[in-house]
Length: 189
Ligand code: HPA
Image (cartoon, rainbow, N blue to C red):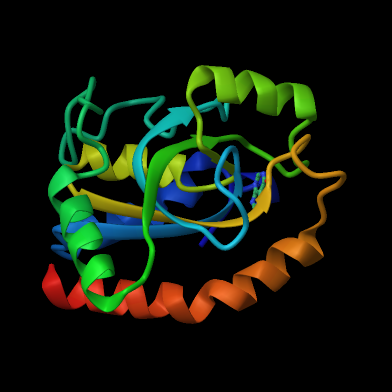
């Protein structure tokens, strides 16, 4: 996976999604680590929608008509049908799955407490540095999407400080449940 904060252009960040579409994929599962606004560390959150605060859009430039229209609809970018399956599967296997809105920023710095307060007012439940560009390109090309965030920390201002080590440590703690959930969902799609 390529991140924008690593200095990659949006075309490269989203290139794998276009490759998957070109290979004939019908759906995409995207996962990420995110800071929780309301949700605490260890939560798995099905993404119902996103807010693009990256300041970028991967579809800027000539439209690739072979993939999709100039002005794609984003109303069902996170496919309700896939999400319903994820919730059903999670319940069946006894893994708690919450649901919320993911707000995407460019990173690489974590947010300020004031930014997080603003994002909360905007309706965000989680904040992270990926996923939004990939999902815009997926929606453009008609791919169905399931997005799941692993909440690795309370977002800035809800805890005294943030560090990458904590994000990695919490990711280690929830990865088995996360993997089990993704594999079980895959079996049902
Ligand atoms: N903010 C942005 N990205 C993140 C965070 C966060 O708090 N945690 C994990 N990825």
